[in-house]
Image (cartoon, rainbow, N blue to C red; front, side):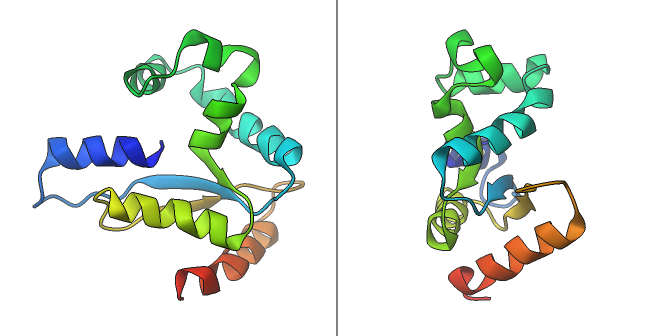
Length: 129
């Protein structure tokens, strides 16, 4: 979910509860490729009524869910771009009230642990880690 959902969740939970949203990421600067990866990730979620309800509450519509997901939806759900752009999205969750953010790297090719690890290693310096 996007940082706006994190902000809403913080409001519901209050300040004294742990909030750890998950953010799917892909270190890919080509918008076409990044959105293709994002749509593959979204495919399952777009079958879940509760997830669609949460997205509707954030202003997304059936048009955003059609055809594997609109660009606007793909961009909101999956943080993509270079290391600084992706780190900026992760920081936006913290600014919205998250205590921590679980980072889910999406495969840029065939899914494998090495690809995920490479993305996390590239992302770490932009996060000061």
